[in-house]
Length: 204
Image 1 (spheres, rainbow, N blue to C red):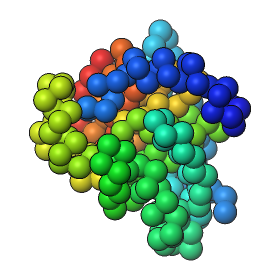
Image 2: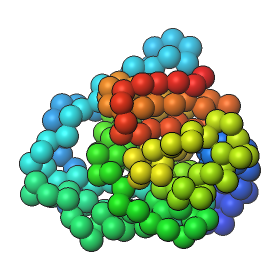
Image 3: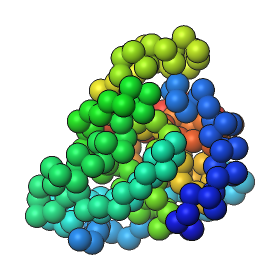
Image 4: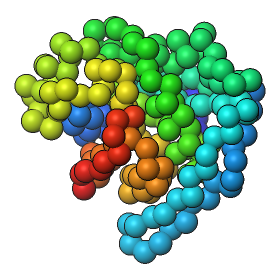
């Protein structure tokens, strides 16, 4: 994918306008197993989601879909999370309205990595919404009934995402196949919600 912001300006602006209120309201990497994506029929997909090797390094590629900030970092190695790189990830996933960062749940980064690897894509995960301050969440809740009053976004435990070139149904299925946390499908707006809460799912 091109590096220049101008190459994506028009389609990106159009996409962000489309998801608008919904999305904002609502080293090397070694894995055990083989990441495989298998298309079934229609819009149904199945994905083999590998477990992460606790001894291997973990690299993640993220893009903030609003600021266009990019990160490609190893955030875990030798059995520990790398504080400096985790802070960079926290900053990328900040509440841009309040310009406030938060200590994101590291399990969320692991979930995003597992989904990315299961889909076998080199495209970065695009973050539409990560951390939200209570004030931002309340403001968005007034605009959209789909915003949870006690959203896990306020605890740094949720992200609304898409991956360029990956059908949203396929991304949703890969997230579901992890059986880890909550997964919401917003097919009309082309994004998936993922969090580290209890296992549950919703949306269409």
